[in-house]
Length: 113
Length: 112
Image 1 (cartoon, chains in turn purple, red):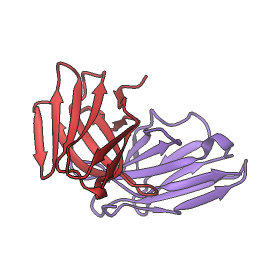
Image 2 (cartoon, each protein chain N blue to C red; image 1 turned 90 degrees about the vertical axis):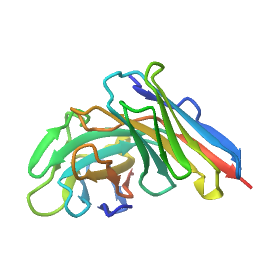
Image 3 (cartoon, chains in turn brown, yellow; image 1 turned 180 degrees about the horizontal axis):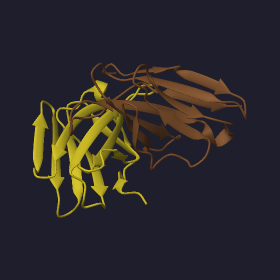
């Protein structure tokens, strides 16, 4: 899907564990977005990052969730002390210049036992 | 608060006919509208977009129409093909906040 790579594709965690989701944007893209999709729903915005900066985190839960996009390496979405309600598909998207469309990865499907 | 709405969860169209997918929005600040197509177990794929200053944009078999006064847009696919069977999401964003706001999707089934 347009070069955005997400891993792992599937992740299973027990309640209370930590989940780390990785996203490598399209080469040359410096804008990264994370979205969450619950079953039978649309994608919901979580966080928007540029290199080393969080631009908009208005969609992030206040606790347990954090995101980073370091100078080197992929963007990471981290969920601490996971609960059953965190089970969802998490999608990363990246874009280049302003107003260019966002390109999505194939997502990480997180299942909480 | 559902700012982007797709009121038809599903649509079935015969191959070769026109598919029309609809989307309504409530936020008059949206500057751009996009349509994405999604297959199971894959991420959304960008199809076509339209700026709020236009009322039509065409790309091959896909045309998007925007009616700003009605806060309504539609995606026309002509002719429909079996490979078009997927879930279609309408999305929008403002120029100052580039996060996408998605509708809940419409599942299109193109039958032979």
